[in-house]
Length: 404
Image (cartoon, rainbow, N blue to C red):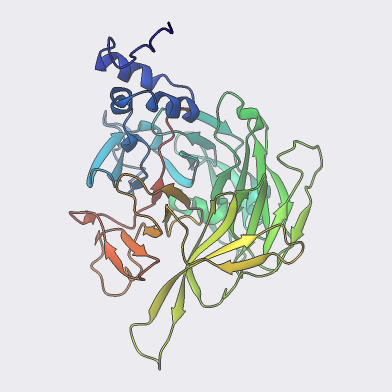
């Protein structure tokens, strides 16, 4: 007579299940944990994975002499409310990237740190330097200021000299940093690639390296976005030209890596608020095409999604997508990289979640806004978030990464 299967739902108190859930080492383990039974799923609710909207914060507040810490304010799509997390690591730093649930932070010395705001994990990357700034035609020099702290001076072509402040760092060094994988136990295999302030070059590094390596993309204008897709980094120019950058992930000691420029994106001139993300292993463009009818005002912005077939040789095939299936797409104005999320819980299928309304610069009261939901099927849009969030423009959506 076969032995009956054990009833794993009994005998373990809820508090113990929650402790076990917090110690899981990977998303795969979390999925297996949730599949056991309903009490185990309750101990690790899906709300823990739902994207959150990161709102602006003041990196210089509170003052260093106070005992208070910098707080990160987040909007929960699942619970439809705003909450704050104390994160002293944010003090004195600017966010220069959000990738795979990690934030890339840079201080006034151009030191770069990766931070997982949900686990407290931290990984140091090489600091930016004169070469990085020079790639964007910026001339800088290190100086000692503020009681011996290292800072940077920006030397203008007119002969003027200006101290680089925190709010200028992304305009001088790194605009956005993207990761090939989550920094974990094998963080040495992870590659970080950076969009520079104003350059056709990109910079990349691995954990433990002393400096960033510059790589030419051979596009005709400055790079505005970087995406990691199908094992390679894709650099995208401001006019839509793309360059596939190889020989980095494999760890080959080839400097510089090879780059293959490809064709332009569709409708590059008429598209605004372009974002890029990977869905089902393929590069996608999410944008809003400007439609003008007899010079009427306001102009109409139609949401469009394109999918790119990178296997089509030197001329990749871009095709318009009307339905992305059971997926929601999360994009922001602050960074070019977005991501997709399964349409479960409160995430709606075939919809775009914008960090800001499309018309937030057309007469809206500054500091009073809500994210916007655009339905690709109907073309309709609606504001989400109640009450409307106060503050300057939202930074970006972030998907919690609880394991690395």
